[in-house]
Amino acid sequence: MAKEYLNYIAGEWVPADSGEWFENRNPAHWDELVGLFPKSGTAEVDRAVAAAKEAWKTWRLVPAPERGAILKTAGDIMVERKEEIATLMTREMGKVLTETRGDTQEGIDTFYYAAVEGRRLFSHTAPSEMRNKMNMSFRIPIGVAGLITPWNFPMAIPCWKSLPALVCGNTVVFKPASDTPATATVLVEILLEAGIPPGVINIVHGGGGVVGNRIVNHPDVSLISFTGSSEIGKQINSLAGADLKRVSLELGGKNAQIVMDDADLDLALEGVLWGAFGTTGQRCTATSRLILHEKIHDKFVKMLVKAADKLVVGDGLDEKNKVGPCINEGQRNIVDEYVQIGKAEGAKLRCGGEPSTEGKNSEGWFYKPTVFTGVTPKMRIFKEEIFGPVLSVIKVKDFDDAVKVHNDCLYGLSSSIYTRDVNNSFRAIRDLEAGITYVNGPTIGAECHMPFGGVKQTGNGHREGGWPVYEFYSEIKTVYVDYSGQLQRAQIDNY
Image (tube, rainbow, N blue to C red; front, side):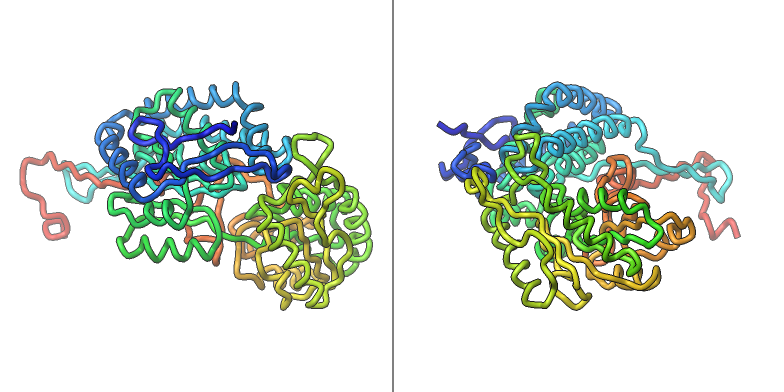
């Protein structure tokens, strides 16, 4: 009998009003049912928002360092449960244990960082232009935060969103991805065990079209944070904008690694293998474009194809495997459709290009690491986000050409350059149109205390992580204290 998970609303674990459930299955072994989850509707969202709105009245008055102390306790609990969480995450979304341990560790790091930020919600004081008057500002909570998270980082990204929201004094209504609801439920359990009061955190399971849309449209949800596709992000921005809600969008990517002729090729190879095929390419920061200087192109392609062919594809719970499954059959079909598009466009398939169905891999949604060469900037496989283990390689003549090709893209999340030339390193930092640039590192590897986000159609200018996310989840209140004992009319009397 599969475990039946519940929503957490207004301090109680409850099923969906409809009594209906949806399945969560292991993408490596589709016959394995991880759990059943409540197929919720708008009524459950309304109750969750009402509970969060009521809880906000008292939660906002809890001193921020005290809120941070609760998150520190939760981080300690997560340390104890790290291996359990990693195993569950691999079962429900497929990526290998090394990566799910890292995903969980990112959550732990974010707990500890958020705990400290409870003592660092700094603002500014400034001199007044009047005598006997003081000017200052404070960061204050906003209200109910609606959080909608993706399936590829089912612990790290919910932590990126929920913990800053909570430490800033907001309450939360959380809709996790339907492909990874079990890990999300564990996060809520840990927060409750650590001492988060009833109503402060609420989790509502269900589809984005119903639960997600109601969160976005609900008049008592003050701010929205969403990670997912650019298409859905645009819809959310439009809907929330009608009520002038604060919205943070972390959307698509088509990230490129540049390898110059003076690069350490062995290091660059390690970087692109990890960037392109880690998480089966199912990252918004995945390396899906490889831009090679013409002088090293042929040599590097041979190295790349040989190494990619050796990557072992299989169940992420087996630690010999390096590449897990696609999240579901639909996503694997999308990957294969893009491979067929690449062939039709005239790109040369160098390895992979088909599902991996050998042995037990036939039980899941595996796809072989795939490399195309002879790609041009006009091809769809060069321009469109695939979200799978497909790498498009393009040849360039020099640094300026590499930058031009890199920037010929709708997205601008992460970028990478491998070079020993310090001047080109800093030119790349300046000229690559991306929110993140790595020098002599792959396009993946974000750290929780640094801003994360991109430009162009990758988002709407806000950042996850680091100090900026605390600015998103709080409002600035400006205060003037006049202790002169008389009316001072600022600019009128002062000039």
